[in-house]
Image (cartoon, rainbow, N blue to C red; front, side, top):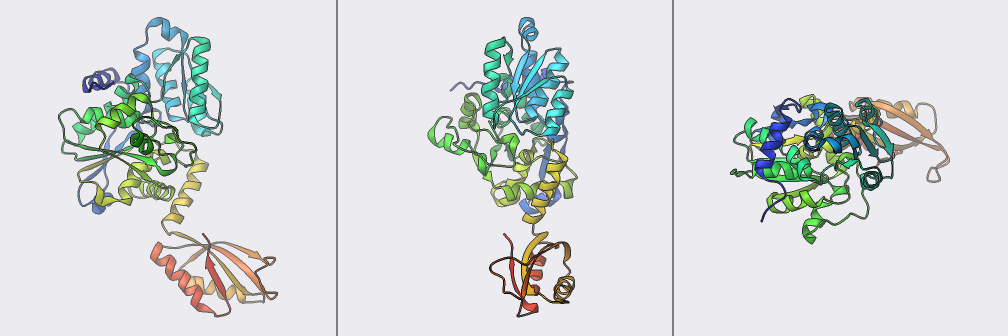
Length: 405
């Protein structure tokens, strides 16, 4: 069966991108290698121009427009990374660009998109809403729609990542790819299918996983709802072009939950000093969750690193909770002098660092002579967290304690 994009198309796109897109590094991850039992490499597209792989597909698509099409300008829709890729590509090629972003899109990504010279409009609650608005704008104005994933030129451009992986890790056995609409996954699968025996696995956020039901149905199926911190891959339905390729060439689609994404983001910061946005960390999250499932040598893509500092602080905190490094607990103690000091002494003795303390005297479950103390404490990991909770539970039979969810 003829597919919409061939390995030759990917190689041609790579030639177009030479001198435009960076050849991003692959970084070794020894901590992941110890989990997997063999070499693990990180393909760092978070270090790409504009902070993600999206410049590859956007530039390839816009570069192939004729003079009249470029004069009419281009329009795109994105939660942020494709927006920046289109804005940068359009500026390099001297083409006006308008970008539609969903309401609530990252402020950092919106500012960066404007900084590359694009006109930004907000529309709808999801990327799919923004795509519909961009399509209507294209119909009204004659601007050329640069779809984030559903076009052969875009898929071919993204596939240049796969060519680099094959050159940088010639013996790669498994590649894990962050997946939303499927442009990057389809492109990498096309590049690596050219005479190689590499297992290609797409990774989606559990709360926005459109590919599993679509593959089961045999055609793209829209999700009724989505909920994930990984806004960059929160896509309600696969594109027709990448779906045809994924269905034929990709070996498996797996999903990861929000805690796994948070843990991966924190570990990448701690161990590799790499900043990934949630969408860019899902491949590493899958590797951490099921290291035995992927034959080494493994390459995990980090597809983007555009992250709002305020969101980063919340995500790091969430990741530390998921890793057992923070613990929240409620303890009912006698409402008398010295009771709180005694509780804090127990925590200190267990080696916990108290970050926050709140008193509550009006809960219906409290006895008249009790006060509830809600605490957030810092621990060294899940085992130490359990030791701290056990120490509190055993310290005084008059205390009633429970960990908060």
